[in-house]
Image (cartoon, rainbow, N blue to C red; front, side, top):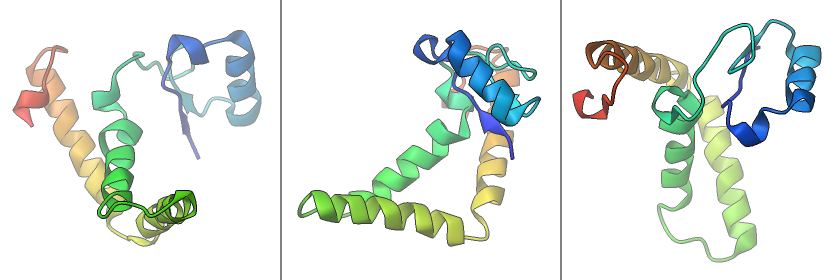
Length: 114
């Protein structure tokens, strides 16, 4: 398993990086890690461009009735993703499109290419 670190300044402390090195060794992606990743680049982070939006759309399909209902919908949203055998392929396909668009834009804004 790999850990993808967002590299946000608030998460970039020595303590945080030491924790990642201890628990993931060479298998974490992010600023300061073995595999560099630019901070504040949600357009290239699968958690940001796919996961949170997908779960949010599932959770708020209808307004939750209360906090317990909200919590249960969040849990079900993640369970649905975990059970979907095609989810990782869709994320990989989306990531591939994003990488190609980023290259076309020469590292600039590329959402309009998607």
